[in-house]
Image 1 (cartoon, one colour):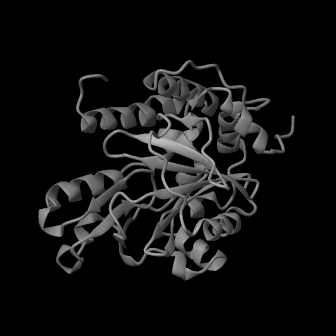
Image 2 (cartoon, rainbow, N blue to C red):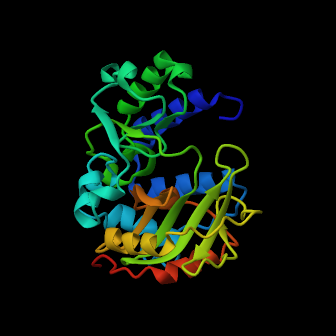
Length: 299
């Protein structure tokens, strides 16, 4: 798909996943899309062993196909998860909600503040960040949001938690533009690592830390950050919140923000990078796999 615009490429890929690859098994889909992702990042791909998973990516895909939690659709739903977070850790961790809409034509643009975030509740990365309402192209934003509402993220990833989420548009207050979000990797309900992304809108880099804020010698997909982000002041509180939100799950990545002395909830991700992100160096795929203890399916 080289040479095509980002818009056309994404539309074509959704069509392929929805109407071509949909006829193939989950196992085939996982292998072929992982191979494509590794190729895109210039990494060498080894076929995943899903019958006896050992590495992190293998285990994430095993969970994705065979062990998705029965309330996973609530965790993946960017609107429904708010009630889950409220009950587990408290409403004060939620970013203020400005509205929920069934389609983009329902958005009361004139009533919204100057800055806000619009996101489709049933997918990943389907967000519009508005830093100045006067400059947003409402027609283009409406088209984009309605296009997302017409898609089902399940077909792009085979993550079953997305399959039956009722599509909606969620509008939240913008608490800050391009601020760090701290992604806590929680294994069997225990936070062990923190991922921080830098330069997502320019030169994307990524850093991993342990809970003592020691930089780790690996990354996933993107180069290790050349500038080490500072330890968040609310790290201890973030660890506690992550443990509470991930309790009872094989694996969860809990995304949190720290802004003006307040910790805010971002989202819960059950399958980071869809379980197909290449590790650099590659052996750390196995190292993180040892952190995740699974009861494999009955033979």
